[in-house]
Image (cartoon, rainbow, N blue to C red; front, side, top):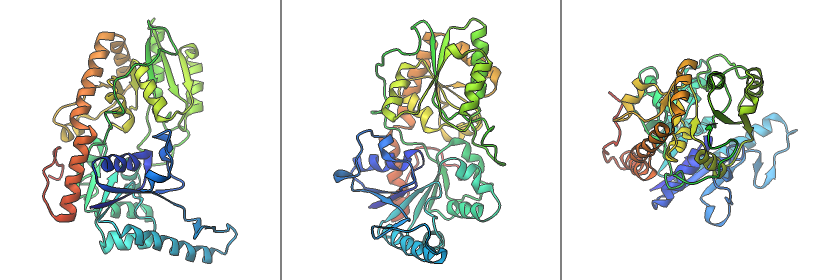
Length: 401
């Protein structure tokens, strides 16, 4: 069985193909030169030798020659068609193509061969705004994204809130599917205390700073709402709370976040940190007492799940009505959405015994439902069902009715 992954949003295609290769499968990754680079996930990554299973494509280069920007538009179009035709022929050599975020439908020929003529079966993984926002848009882009999900041999909904879109988008072959977490990499470990004294509760907000101020396009449903944490944290400090927060300085509202911290008068209790590679991120998960994620979407992303795998309590908003359709039991988290609810959870998390108990249960829950060994076995079953017609038994409840 030969599998081609394409579309590498947040590095998931790289992680999944890498883990499947650990199980002996022939999985290869096709990645655009403009996409996320594997070196962020693996500091010592090199696309040479043992990593020849990664194919980096760049439609501005053909046969080793850079296409001049000043070239006539019609000629550039013809060259681009030739380039994508060659890439298409490569993908058709595989038994199945697994595409994230609609990346497979990069040209008309791809739509025709995969979405209409079904030359090869493909798996469509929904990752976020692709299905929450774009699939509901009018116009060409919206129609293409809906077609991408509707014509897939199987659509995997990677966020639990997406189960609400099943009927609205007529997704006949869709099911919830959990993110694959490398629990050996994301695990309990020691880290030297930084940013505050041992007596203070240490909060780490690793999600993008985004509550829809700078990026306020119509129809956005993927903001983080994490300004509410900053406001609730300020209330807690003014009520004589003893805590410190360190925040990744990233996201469209990062400058506004700095202004908000200053306006709240809590600058001495907040440290902004630059973006970091995964090894540094894991270190900061381990030294934090609580990891703070997002409060709008109502679902887990990989940041929260990786922190939970490190046995850390995660403060996040999860839609329980959707979670109950996806998991046999609810996740042990600090569930909050509004500023008042976040404030309550901050107070509860100030109790060391309580937060450590939540963290330990979080690790156990991840091992049951997101460990890569379990999830990859289920994924292989899905591939075999699609390619060979073997019916597989899901580890998770199907949402197909």
